Image (tube, rainbow, N blue to C red; front, side, top):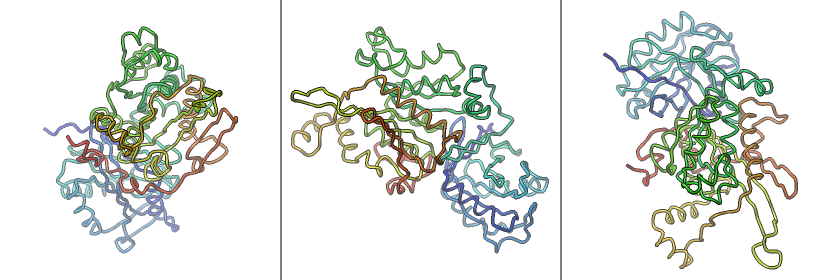
Length: 469
């Protein structure tokens, strides 16, 4: 008896989707074929992550029309050899220029001959997919894995300036009455999409807790909470729903928020990891999500999360708040600046490192402080590294403003409604001192991370030796 296969979804970044669309929709209005090779995030919900896209060259086509295509599979040999060597999944995509949103009888016949042959060539126990792209870019597909029958592809996601999720209609999720008010603003399709999404929030304190509160009340289906810290008295003034009793009992921040989510009772499922993001279980849980919010001060954590989002093709919203006060003198304590920034990071484009927000020397210093405090102290004393700033001031009103800005940026990418296209907005900064909002465009791709889009599961995890088991 064959093992039951997990549900399978397909994910790519906007550049890969655009490349695929150009291949599949040449100017002649006839069908075309593209091949994608994919890494994976294995688990109960198996995710295929596009690593590279290839065109079937015109020399391999024997017949093409607006509703039919014939082509030689000789072009697959080098791709199948690579898939076999690297244990990659193969995705065959063809176009329906006329917009027919289903597999045709011709497609059925072709797929039942081709896909078992691909599975036979690639001996690894991996799923393979046949998919269709429509003229508007929408995609759907089916999976051949361990059995003899095709199963529907659960979801196709494109992670770009806009967030696109196309689901198999057979897996619709009920939406509660409580969504009615914001369904009027964003549409029933958006509220249903929110209910299907799994969102990770890494950092459950000042900005993390109001992000979680909003996501729950918007109807997000699942939230994964990651934070290894416990509540202290100094946290109670800015972590929603926390109490002085929580502080006295040193309650886990993540568990306290999870209890609050369950008490609200709106149906959001929650998974708790009262651990550092470096924990493998926590990292794999985040990798399985659809969207990530980073609400950390730690530069090491932000670097790690940006890297993870690249490897697993995740959209990453990074939140940072800064309150600057005069450090000494007669004006000591006077506020000079109150500001915060939401950075939206797309896999394959700029990163926190290339934007100058995370310095790798400081990341290494934080790592040394965590693993060898004595050596860290000595290097600070000797002047080799700078000390890490701790316990930065935070005010709940500022945190909530920035959290709301981040969640609204997420909604705007899920359901574009802004006057300017999302492609012109890579970060949003707000200054309460000058009462201004600043928007910055996307920058050049990050040379450190660009090559690792969609690399998924690997050893060592994220290609980092310190994460080796």
